[in-house]
Amino acid sequence: MGKLSDISWPQPVGRAVVDAYCRAYNVELDECLKRDGFSSFDEFFTRELQSGARPLPSDGGVVASPADGRIESQGPVDGRRFWVKGRPYSVAELVGDEREAARYEGGAGCVVYLSPRDYHRVHAPVGGVIRSVRSMPGDYYPVNDIGVRHVPNLFARNRRVAIALDAPEASGFGRVMVVMVAAMVVGRITVSCIASRDVPFGYHEMSPPRPVEQGEEIGIFRLGSTAVIFFEPGAVNRWEALEGPIRMGQPLARRTHKRGTDEGEG
Image (cartoon, rainbow, N blue to C red; front, top):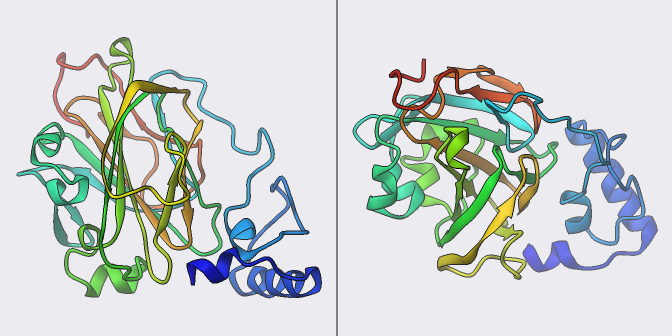
């Protein structure tokens, strides 16, 4: 399917496929940089938005949603586990490293599910530098509600890429981890700081670290997707958005005090 999605198609065929897809999934193209003339299904699925289509928070104490989608779960990391739809997930399995997982013990996590209708590019929730990228092999189970409820340890079993983003010390956000989880049919994930359409498996340390602004593109899903975000203890202490629809750039969480001056992420 990955190779099929890359195949260039005659424009009449492409137009018919895109029109049918948009009708089936209620896709809106008004905000897209390109509305027709897509050369392949991949170009359509990874379509870009017009500049300014997703305003960013003006408050430096706010974490922005990294993607369009639906918040499926949010809450504390306890015992190095994060609960999604009543199921516990090992943070170490999700991020691919025990020492890295220890950073988020006592912190918080959030799951944003990207449906077939959504914009499938992922952006930096905070400004800072990309310190590392870890690319992990896995399965390609569907990550929709049925998959989450019926496939044990789903997110940790699927192909995934963990992007470690270090915010400036003065911001108080510390390290923010964005885990891009692939889904059914195609599991290719592109990361902006690695020159490959699909991130090679393994640990990739950025030397020097790659600077990014809040809202800057950091990755692309090439079909099917979920983003899991982890925060260190005290980095955020209030959710700005609850379970439900959210767009990239909208406020996701807030830091209302300096880390270490209070406890909780409530």
